[in-house]
Image: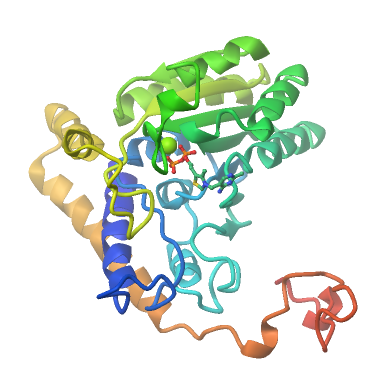
Length: 338
Ligand SMILES: Cc1ncc(C[n+]2csc(CCOP(=O)(O)OP(=O)(O)O)c2C)c(N)n1
Ligand SMILES: [Mg+2]
């Protein structure tokens, strides 16, 4: 878990540097090697690592617009993920999805920029597992700002009424862009949403990776043992703006400060030291993580960009007439999966 968390933090620090290249002095969101929005998850790492530690490749995970820490913990290919973020042809989605639309069928991971959007597909994956008679589970991650969405509530209901192997994980960072949670949701503890759907709901009050791990063991175990869905809420902290370039004028200095002081990575390192892991070993893990990040970024930056003539590929299997000149179909790719 420590390695996943350190990798995610380092990865985002490096993405941040790459992202800012060419975007200054006036912030130009379309400039530089990573055009478009970038939502960083520094402060969320414990949620991804603590939950995904219980998962295997055949389990499904859906994540929202702040996906990197979850993707890393789920084992998404770091090089192809990075190429995707840099908009390169060898990226997970051919370089056309960007950082909010990572899709790795090798480890059954997907994310989306539409909030709560991952919930219905996770329920679908739970149904598929049931039909295939496997003990695979599905986990949907979402922010606390998404818990009033119909897609989330309907998913809780369907998962419950069919006893599906699904775990819903709310990452509560207290903010939805500039909106504090108490202004949009009537419950302080999002896990209470479970009560209305007759499923267990647990809240982990601190972004303590070990506490998340223990709560997730219960929820994932319950799903795997065919005892139905669960809801888990984890308190995390948004150390950054909503997206890169967000001046956060709506947020008080003490609130920003508090988010950076509670560091789940430092906390886990202290726990590990307490259990006899020495500094040298922790340093070796950090070095390994940093090397892996560097290698992925260097590799990605060397990759080709998508060809202009492929702009309409991958958008439609059978495009409506007039959408493209070439009207590519799946067969046109020579059967190659795209
Ligand atoms: C259905 C939908 N409505 C609105 C948006 C715009 N939007 C993007 S992120 C966001 C807030 C998300 O807050 P939260 O779910 O708490 O996640 P966080 O950003 O805090 O990780 C909103 C409203 C969207 N992407 N999808
Ligand atoms: Mg939030």
